[in-house]
Image (cartoon, rainbow, N blue to C red; front, side, top):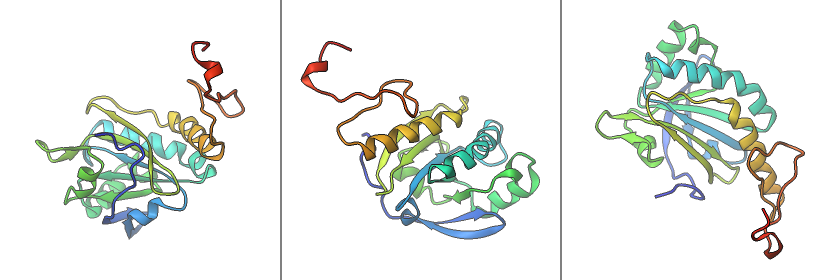
Length: 187
């Protein structure tokens, strides 16, 4: 079942962020845009490359009013250990949420029940706590965080301009479409 258009359900979790353990709830996904990036496991192979890449986009995302959260079924203690021992993960300044109960991974429908690990899922959540985009990759396929910036710009544009939609490869300032009977069969 699609999670697009669904509000994030209540949860409480511990996270590691900037040298501290912090509590994160679904309320952290309200009032601003959020990116939630699920990944299989700390101390793994593709995951550190993705999380470092996401950190590389963090400033651009924050400029758009977006907060970033990563999530795995590891604990927040393991996140701290990984942060302290990995050059790539040591760069991360966004919250790394621990989901050892697997409740958040289940809620976002990315839990691989056989392995007990999260799939590679990326979610963009609007300021109302409603999921606007979902991307899920197979375990061996890493994500490119640079694609998030344009997706979020498009989502923000559509939210601010009801009745307009952004076509493929839309970039800020580009032409949008206003769906109408006049456009049927002409695109």
